[in-house]
Image (cartoon, rainbow, N blue to C red; front, side, top):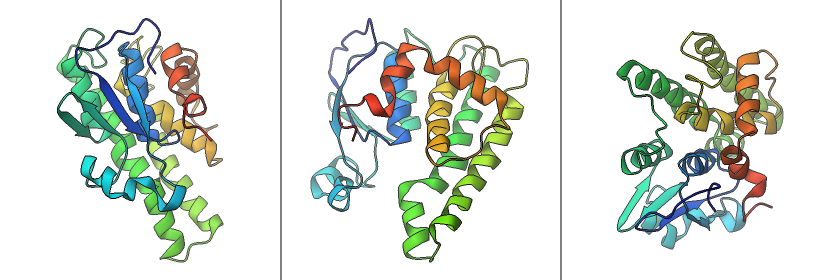
Length: 225
């Protein structure tokens, strides 16, 4: 799968992911925005105890997480590292600003999503909270919503700065948008209240209208269930 008007890199790109993984979703958006052709390899995170736990997949990513990007003889894991690798390897469509303050601002928003929100709400954490800590579904939902609200409140404030335009930073998509949209998808899926964040909602809607974002959406992936 690739974005419209994509091109094939000299070595094929193979993305191991799962349709509902927000981390894999981020990488799909970045690949599509850069117009890169890539093959997807599904790693079902819930079937049979999770295919990410298989010995075969652990040889690709010993941590047992998605995504993992294979490019030639290189295997890159962790969505931030993958997106930075794509930025450095395929610079024709930049997803980071050209100035150091701009890059730092975009990376701050990226890290807010991938360090402060998503890890506290991922599949492994929520399963542990229920199975090992005894939280019922309602308590687990409150946990989830707490970290969404904390992170989204900060993002909403930053998006009110002059450096934000039609998108998170300026008037074109950056890595910040690649990370924001999947996190909003997760928040909506778990019925978190996003009404207090009009800038987030507006930017997300603008992104979702773009083919690169639309084609990366979970429901359109080959392994969607």
